[in-house]
Image (cartoon, rainbow, N blue to C red; front, side):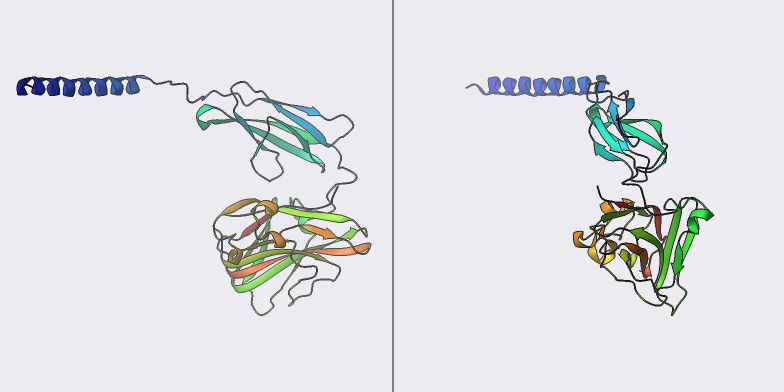
Length: 292
């Protein structure tokens, strides 16, 4: 083939490639709304009481252009991924701010909130803990603070509106407990919201329940760990927030079920400590309720 013809064809091909590349670039820049995101996705939802129950409600999200739903039930558990129709159970009296997060195209999430007022606690599954919300001095007074390690003063419980904050350093530890009445043969589920803005260094937080009274200077171990956070078990090293049933670690130490062997008084005990809890562990919404 003539060398001139080959060169011409190569030149034409080069210009064609450049032209196509430029055209593609212009199209990419000019297309602003490509339909892959939806900033106006509608998060509205309805709340319908379940007939026959003062504590159950059906949440129904509108479904147009909604790819998925997230819900926050206002109980301190945070946002979770759920269905567009959720039936929820709120066993304790109080006001709950329900928030729906509608997921639209492109992963955009818009939210809407409504309040549910629960007038009465469920007679079977109501929380048997008193002052579990830690709202004020009256709630705080329901708890007894005790010194697990009496050899130093490097651990504290600090109470604020809606929480108790445990902090410790120098391998000290502190605890608090409440006496509650249980019925033989019944199972009780224990949970609470725990959070730390920093995580800790070589530290732990543990929950127990037993028939013996906690004693100063003694680690409470009756019944074994029911809930736990431990940096040695790879949780609590960095920041976290949520129910301890979710953010706790090592399944065998986080089952959360106490089975009453005798009718009478038991003690729900929380204790923790370590080398350095840094910003501390915040405790909220403490629950102990009969399993259904």
